Amino acid sequence: MRRRILYTMIAMLMAVGGLLGIPLSVIAWWWVADSAHQLMDSRLKTISDQIIRQAEMGEHLNNAVIDSESIRLMLPEDGRLTLRYQDVNGKPASTSIGADITDATMSDSIGLGAAGTLILEIPMDTVRNDQLAAVGIVCLVVAGSMAAGTVTAAVTAGRIADPLIDLADRSEAMARGDFRSRWKTYGIDELDRVSRALGDANAEIALRLEREGEIVGDVSHQIRSRLTAIQLRLDELSLHDDPAVVSEAEAALGQVDRLAAELDELVAASRDEPAQPGSVDVSSLIMTLVSDFDSAFTAEGRTLSVSFSGDAVARSAGPGRLREAVSVLVDNALQHGSGECRISVSDLKGDMLRITVADEGTGVADDVATDIFRRGFSGGAGNGVGLSLARALVEADGGRLELTSRRPPVFAIVVPAATDRDDDAPKDANAATRVGSRRDRVPHR
Image (cartoon, rainbow, N blue to C red; front, side, top):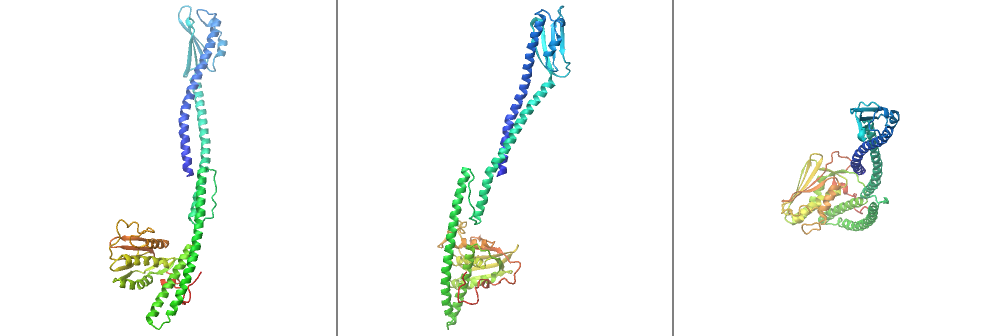
């Protein structure tokens, strides 16, 4: 911006310099020529008075009545005076006094009536030199004015651009979550108003985030307490004599473990705690989801199928993110779709992995297709959070979630694939989220 302001002001200075400099140069050129003519006219009047006095108002002029030395003193430097008259015989005659000029001249004349005519000449080179000097002075003045204007423009551009750059840097810091920056004033009313407004917004956002952090901490504590109670009761059920009851209790405990792990990820995300990306076995993750949803689809008289192609290993900093995103799509297919729900996992070129969820329902209407990922928008009986949350979770891992087909509906998740598997990284998504072998408590931070 500094450069743009500086270039604009310099362009204006050049335009003003051209508009003033050219006419001033022309005026200076004419003024020098006019001054030369006025000087010559003044000298001619003085010389003519002198010549007339020397001739004592004689009817005829000749060399005898003219004092050449006194006349020579009145001539300009390098000037020449020519006296044209008629001699006693009535024939034209002339007398020259001064320098011998061979080049172009500037001349002026004055009549002496019947006595004759005086012609004063000076070299044109002398006039041209004075004209060029005058034009040069005008150019120097214009150039000096432009130089001073350029310095002023640079100072003004800096005075305007520097506060704007500082405001932009502080705004970027605020966008990154740094709310410690102080918002200062710059002595420019408009910028000071912007700085005060951003400072107020900075304080308000920091206060709200602090409150949200406190709420997240309180909610996580309450949820963990309830999960602990649920876990203890499920542990008791796992000791039941009925194998079916034990199986359901074990499945419920697994869900509690996954919920606890996802709660840890959400709390860490709210605190901006960085996580190291690791390998996630997508096949195990999908099969776990299938087992969770299979009974619900069976109750609706529908089927849930899955197919794999390739390694089916993703790279993610939070295994719960991908599982939750796929879970949202499968749940939407259960709630709003019909027929068979198909989950397909395949490798793509460029070290990417694609997961598609499709069903045989009526699909997504054209007028709402562009809004289904907007938070709070629902095309049915939902609350409008699921798809928005799923897209946010996928994008947090560097992937994307798109509606690739409206009728029948097909949602596709594309995430980075794990290229180098770490032997220490868990291949099983359940193992990655399992808190431990013991089920006597929910882990707390």
